[in-house]
Length: 295
Image (cartoon, rainbow, N blue to C red):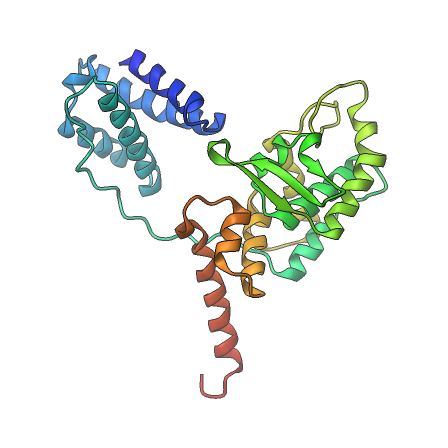
């Protein structure tokens, strides 16, 4: 089964163009499943069946895994078995009639406009790292791009003259996202006065670099945003995607149509974008309850 797994992971990388972190997640989940199969003396995918998969999922549940984690494992198994079926390794997909656990809808954490202002004003633009951090935070809130897209940006993907960035999202899908004046101004300052001092002798094409001149990582960005959230004394739970969630919610609150927000966020399915409408409806309810005389 290891060969089929390697072929499947190669298919995800080459043909579907999935991000390396996504492929690592698939590998981790499916390696666990293969270990479970080997423990039951099953080494051929044709010997696996629905009962075995159910036993594996029950084991995950018994070990304390959350419904979201179990659903992720099942999604990986679905994709793996569909691939094996398409490759002629199986005559039937044993996951085809397995139901994914129903998960409660999890609303993302969102900052108020005032909290965003507070967070974005924490970096000190008088030093190269501060200029970089200010430009990154302004860019994230101006565009709503994913953190993985932010740290993957190269210089050639930024057009300050036309005020847009060209980024590649999930599945290597390209999209053009406009920039606001504020983000463009701080990006210009970072490129003119900050990046040149950070990059030193490196020839990296990366837009955002660390203190050693190499590409900034997601983990590096996570440390940066946590530091500024603590300085700003923001009580809302901050994650790397908080500014992305805030970007989408604030657009909808100010009258943007959901299709445009979907396009800006790079969501393949509009149902993913619709989670933000629940947040705006919740806020409307709070305003109504607080202000209407008969609420």
